[in-house]
Length: 87
Image (cartoon, rainbow, N blue to C red; front, side, top):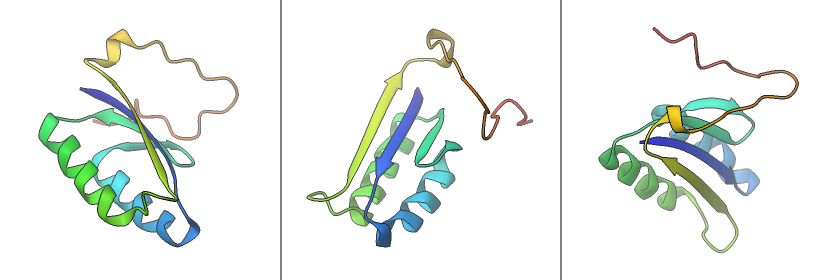
């Protein structure tokens, strides 16, 4: 499935969440990631994210779609990190 992940963390936890998300997804902008994940990978990511988060202060939002081809992506301004260059 194609996933867009957005998070807002307390300052002490931002670095850990950034590292975790980079293991599973492609960074596209501050606190925003995208990419293809299996159901198992998504469960692993959420399990590890919950261990980092303080669920009373932090938030993590997921947008899921079966395939990237069903998503129209429009970028206005500079694209910080293109994900089209992967081999």
